[in-house]
Image (cartoon, rainbow, N blue to C red):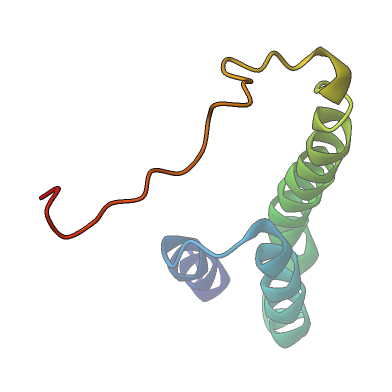
Amino acid sequence: MDALFRQQQAMLRTLPTPSSVVAEAVELWWAWRKSADRPFLGSALLMLIAILFTAMTVAASIFSSLIVNTGTIDVLVDSTRCAAVGFNGTAW
C-alpha cells in the first residue's frame, strides 16, 4: 500500500458527497502525478463511481417528478365545514 491509497482511504472515511469525491480524487491525482506509480489508475475508479452515482441521482430526481400526477391525488377530507378550531382560555 502506498501513500496515495492511504490518502484516498482517509478521504473516503470523511464521507464526502459524490461530487466532492470527484474533485478530491482529481486533486489527489494531480498532487501525486509525479511521485506515485500510475496515480491516475488509482483515482480513476473513484472518479468513475462518483460520476456515475451523481449522474444517476440527477436522473432519478428528474424522473421522480414524472411519477406523481397531481390530477390523481385523492383528498381524504374536502368539506365546507372544515376549518381551524378556535380555542379560548376555558377550553383547556
